[in-house]
Length: 476
Image: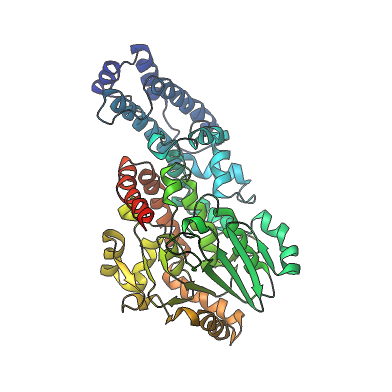
């Protein structure tokens, strides 16, 4: 690999780096010549050389204070080193992703979730991704104070999804039921309901309802809701007595809406600002909770490049109050959307500084490309009575008629049997969002969302928009 340029090397020394430390990094960079073919022997040798680069870079980064002012010479020097390390990680992953994934998954027979894959990769290839301990240490910091270690996770996963065998395997792995779901299934079948804290799930006849239950934050999603919502979704899909799923918000405790059902305020911006939302939140949410509603649970036996064989059910979304951000994203994977009069939905993620999940891939199918651009790029809000909103919302009813509307939708979904419903869902989805298209989207999304999540612009946007919203809420 090419060493740092003479100008970059001189700049690092001007920022206080010892000449010997800069020379050590340059020698390590020059010593890595990635094997032309990704063999096991070549991987072992290149892995050792890459680790020498990571260690030399880490030694330099320790010289400069974390998150100093962007214009400071030390901060700029740190960015030079980080860019060099990122270049090496990406070149290494581009060459060896298939070999790494095959080794960790035992040739794609051991099914690892995203959050397991990245940390096992960190063990097999030290320096390629951060360790659990490193991420845990950063999790105690505000977002503005983080070094962005998890960007390496996004880069690695981008290469995983860009490689079809590895990407397809990971998508399948994420559609498998969680171990906790299988453990709780017997009790749920007996009791017909389960309180998971930030999520509740209940069976009523053939309907399985998943309730978002984060009342303090207007049913926003965060690190506390992630696993419970996915478990609740698993239970609805696993219970043979349930034929239709429902997503609905519970009543909230916020002073402005106290006692009212609210669908979802999207991402918990308070937790995001405080640094409590890890980068992997986006991916585990999009490929677990949300994607299981859209695609169902993985079928038995993984066959590479075979047609989708998922266990799926129709889903209804009941929108009361508003569906902001992640809440709006749920409407794009539901089969039938009912909204109360006066409700609205929008996707403010771009204004906040992030990518709104997989909505950029999906929204235009409903509202058209131009309106999708207005929604994603310019924060367009959709009142549910508007003509544009009605391309997503099937029914608008007064609040007091919501329960009756849900019952009608359940009867409509089960009228011809859920087997044919699931088959037709797959057939429609094949033309809208085949797995290859989603996988290619994810290859871009993993990398760019990581950059957005740790961008100073996101912190600035949170300061501007989130704090203003907090002040308004206090006044209200």
